[in-house]
Image (cartoon, rainbow, N blue to C red; front, top):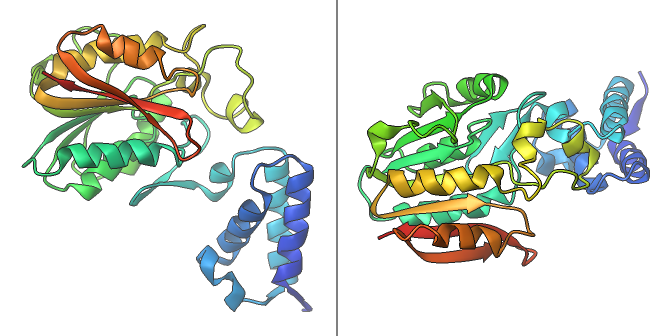
Length: 281
């Protein structure tokens, strides 16, 4: 069987993906090649020549990616901080920017012994699992309302010790047993205003209810703010990811609860508003 340069296959994949409007064609092409070869992306150079069947397998996945099927669906996984989780149809794909919220949350937990953490709108369970991995002494609870997402979270959390709850953040009785006992509440909720244009990977593949939240995108966050104010112990903290148009609105919502102080908003690496935080007085 004739072997071919892997470099040429990756170059062709990059061209196809760029023509299709994929935002990161080179990175996606290399990740697909690494997936097919079952090697880390950083070791692709160690495989300069590949069989035709490898080239064909890469081309097949590239065709799907060019249709704007999420890369993570094709690979079957997504990374968040120290963890990798299974993802696919029916669950929101974790985004790299959520690592900033994770980093902030772990900073809050520094110096706290056996902290209690709640991850609301957990989706795949990635954020809860990342906290539990970084802080094995923590008691971590994860909450999700969608049955399909719950199934993904159950698979990802496995025997991690994270306590998974089927629950709705709009339910006033949710987690009442944890009232005033929680050190950290994290949430990456649906926050995109309805009718906002989004990439095909989001609009056609992420669950609608995991992305959009009313005309202003704040329908779920309003409930999260109230729930966090109830759950947090004095000195506890809440961090809520939000749309980059909500850098004023979400801190304003946090400020409506008098027990929440030190309200601040945090930017992502592109200096766009990304998540808001507050502390329980």
